[in-house]
Image 1 (cartoon, rainbow, N blue to C red):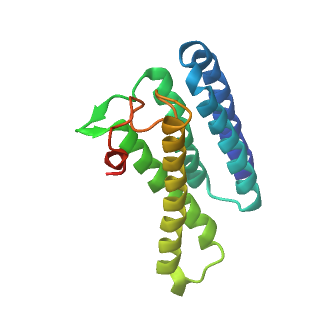
Image 2 (image 1 turned 135 degrees about the vertical axis):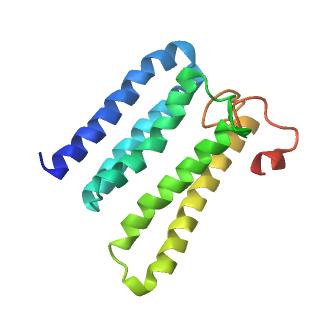
Length: 171
């Protein structure tokens, strides 16, 4: 089986997995429907980006993994959990950043010469940092203005009531 066919199977599997997760989310966590739908849209967008700028299979897998984290954590109720004293929300943001930077780095790397490698790494980190800040703005707007509280992308922190000082969330 060639690499393109394997990547297509990976994308279709993740897409079906996220669609299947809609069923428990609809009945157990209706506020998180938009998160799962956003994840599905993310997989579709990533598929088209990957078609235009082909990536190796491990990078595709690393790019799809963080997209799966949010719906999985909602369905299995991991959002309030801590791992070694670090909240799961922080771990998810770190994973998105690390693996997202890897994907962006590979996308940029195809058109960069070896002497611009450091600049490419910095650009990849800055791009993903900007995307992460956009996610924080969505969380803030969802909690502050739309009244979303719970384990969703539009809610601050671990999905609980937002901290009295929003600056605490960014620390």
